[in-house]
Structure formats: C-alpha cells, structure tokens
Image (cartoon, rainbow, N blue to C red; front, side, top):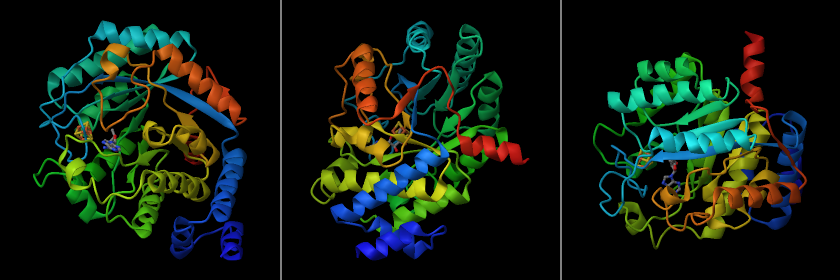
Length: 365
Ligand code: 5AD
Ligand code: SF4
C-alpha cells in the first residue's frame, strides 16, 4: 500500500481514482506521508504563514431550517440575539487594535431590507473606522445578486458560502424539502459572488452518514471546477435539538474518524488546489482539542478566532460542545498564538492575507 501512495503523491497530476485512493488512506504511515506532502505544498505556494480572521457572530436569527444546524428556525430552545451596531463595533475595535488585518461577519440568514441595509451600513462604518485597512469577509448566506453587489460596493471583498455537500441526495437529506433550500440556488449564489467580484469561499461538512470517499473527492473537484479561492470545511457534529442530531446519533462514524477525514480533506484539497486559502475550522477543534494545529499541519493556513463577546457566544451554537464558549477573546487569542507557534508556523499580523489563487487569476486577466 505505502509504495502505491508514495507513487501517487509524487505525481504532478491526479486522476479521480488517485484522489479516492488518497481519501481512503487508513494507516498512520500513509497518513503521515499525505500530511507531509500537503505541508510541503503549503510551504511552497502560500508559505508557512497563518492569517487570522477575527470572527464576529452578529446574530443567531435565521430564516432557514437546515436539519443539522442548532440555530435553525424551528429550534425553539435557542435564545435569539442580534448584536447592535455599537456592540459589533466594539468587537471590530478589538480586532483592529490587536492587528488582525481581517474580520469575518457571520450570522444566521436574513434577507429582509432592514438586515441588508444594516449590513451595508456596518461594512461602510468598518471601512471608515479602519481607514480601509480591515479586510472584510461576509458569511451571511444566500442573497440576491443585487444584495451581494451592495455589500461589495460598501467594501466587503470576500464571501463564504458553503455548498455543504455536492452529493445531491445528501444535500436533500440535509435540508427540508421546501423550495427555500435548493442546491441550484446555492450554486447560483456562488456564481453571483464571483461575478460581483468577491473572493469566493465555500466548503462542505465531512463525515456525514452515507457520504463516501468518492463524494468527498467530488466535493474537492467541485472547488476546482468552480475556481474557488477559499475553503472552510469541517467535520459534522451532532446537535441534540435538531432532526439529524436525533436521526444520526447512533449511525454517524466516530469522532476520531470524522477528524481524520477532515484532515484528509484539507490535505488533498491543498495538494490539488495548491494556492487557495484553507481554514482550520472551529468544528475540527470541536472534536479534537488539537484539531486546529493538526489542520495547519495538514495544509491549512487560515484561522478564525472568535471575537464575539462572551455574553453572546453561548447562544451561537451550531453544534453541541462548541469549544471556547467560556473563554474571553483575550484567552482565545493567547491560546491560538501559542498553538500556531508550537508547530513552527508564523502568524502574520497587519496583512490581509488574500487568496494567492485569486491574485494570480487577476494577474492573468
Ligand atoms: N456540524 C458541523 N458544521 C455545521 N454547520 C452548521 N451546523 C453544523 C453542524 N452540526 C456549518 C455549516 C454551515 C456553517 C455556518 O456551519 O457548514 O454552512
Ligand atoms: Fe441558518 Fe446557516 Fe444554520 Fe442553515 S446552517 S439553519 S442557514 S445558520
């Protein structure tokens, strides 16, 4: 087995079968080879550098009802909150003062004009406050092309919208069968974002019941086909008050396996796509205390420490046992600094850390 894996890893190009074989690796020796190769590629194409995005979870109100997510509309147990502009700006200030060059605004989905205008104004205010220095990533779900344009013109320049799974049967199982949760719409939104001019990020959930190695390889091929600039993906984690948290409780693969699959996804994505930004996500750490460092060693180069005020953190729970909800923003930062340094990566402050893939594309035009 090892010789075959070694041979594949030495190739310049990979067939789908090669990638599936890499995704099926299940012994320590070959896993180490895979991660080592991915780290080499990271070093060569994006450097041993880690960029921070200060994450502000601005509201847990959501019009969608995804069957896996803890803040879905029908979960009555959630105490809903929306941060005021002043509260958000407090967090922005903290991020700015700590020299994170970028922030990410995330929330449940809303499409009403009040929300759209609130975000537009907020983005402008952040830009003004920081003299244009803070890069802004949005992660605010499906919107019209018009809305994406308004937010872009206000000053946001990156957008994250996960495709969740490119296997249509799985996608349908993850979402209610109404016309508000359509794969085609999600995909079209990614196209709108590209057309408007954003750096576009997407990703999937990993380790879902019935998801095969081939499905996961197809997800990576989708990133390639859609010319994606940034990837944020992580293991699926049960949430007890959701339909799938109940249905899948006894059939989901072990947490260890989901972490391993998550790391393989990062490594194979790095090996295939080379110069994109890849985040080591909170969900990875949710299942393994060392998940984020392992993610960096498997090829990730982005971390998103939360800068959400303690008061609200405990209400933004997409899944059970979310790590760090009792930590202050200072503690979260300290922990993360230590971890990154411990593996020998450099934390880059004061630079946006744009996707090199996106920049190279622009140079070609
Ligand atoms: N487990 C893992 N990831 C989840 N997300 C939502 N719920 C869960 C869960 N239970 C992820 C989805 C979504 C992002 C905001 O969080 O991929 O796009
Ligand atoms: Fe809302 Fe996003 Fe959760 Fe779906 S995954 S219910 S859109 S917050």
